[in-house]
Length: 264
Image (cartoon, rainbow, N blue to C red; front, side, top):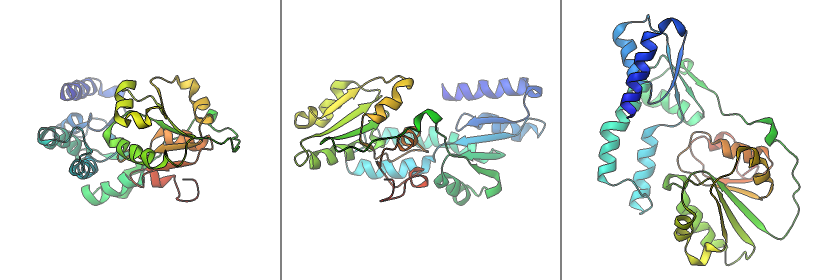
């Protein structure tokens, strides 16, 4: 399906060349158009690739987690699928691009070191935050510690480390709670993951309307997001804009905005 979409996208652009002065496509969707432009000459509009993160990092991280028994979908079949189907599409998306846009300095550096792209061909443009998220915050001591996680419930998001932390902290902090918002997983599945000893500390909110996100951040004390694979997460930026201290992993785009012992 992904390849068919890339083919149709390339066909549409090639049939409507006059409509475009430049084409910006997210990797790996642009690999067919990139190859087409290489083969048919430069009369096609330039191709700018947008890339959130490198697949090489995904493989390295998930291989490590798989050895720990903390990767759900990294068995041999998945690794072969990635090597022979997913990775080649990303590689050709990168190699055929005239220029690139990244959301983190991590990817900006790796595109130069791994793929030999000149720095003047790569634009580092981080995500922004809507003005509505910037609001005053009261740091009252209300006796509770309310943690917040926002995002899909995936192994690559560091969810096993969330469970480790709660198992360690819950006996010492009786008022500790964790809200999980927008997980795209059932409440039953998540509570089962934590087990009965932690289930009463967990509040799963399957869907949060976009207009309610400011209130969600204001109702919690610390943003807990130990994700292992990201670009530059919008939820992290929104939480920081709302005045929340954050706990996150020192990888991908997070070090671009989080300084240890200062704001996280």
